[in-house]
Image (tube, rainbow, N blue to C red):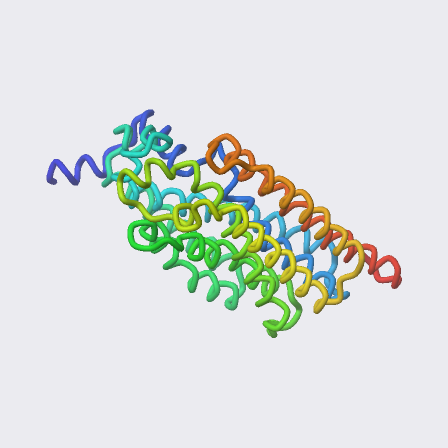
Length: 315
């Protein structure tokens, strides 16, 4: 056995265990929220559209998807750190990550990623219906494409949005009592989610813009420049507009729209107060993202529950 293979297959050290924890961002749940929330929208929507679906089934799938989305987040973060390790070493915010600081070798990181892929494929096949598996498989190549995007284009948040929001279709498919997917309802919601990702990710990328300019990396923050706040205000308005339209087509009522208005007020008011030249401001705006999504989930759920109670339908 060669030394390289022996090293690759050796039991992990304590430092490598900690490095794997860092690669998965297990101390940070942002990626889990941003993938789970669009899925939760869809679960609430299909629960509202199909009165025969019991609330217990919706809650069970919400819990299952929380676990699955945590795994998806870990996969995305790991491959992102592997493919971006050279860039991370040159950026002040990321140079202390596991691979640049030398806590795990690139070969061992790839092995860890491969183990996650095997586990992820097994769980997807064991838990998800065939249609949801196909949606997941369609989004899987974006896991690898996304980390490379900043090297060759300014629109990395578009790829991230397409990847993060695919749960809109998966959530509906897994809980629905039929095999039909109402694309006329879900496509506006899916596109809405992509505009949401553009909004918060562009502000987030302003945190690294000085380093990005030095090393020649492209980003939506550099593309928008001084027009970032107007552009992101516009994308936020499109996000809320399309989401409201999708909810309207699905038959949602005043509680849902109240949630949309509250979330829109919080996001846009925070955005207009954000100084894109202050990393702390950009971080604070980004960290508000789960709250915005949770308010919208709450609006969907409250509206569906009240509609059932009003019509005498069991929860």
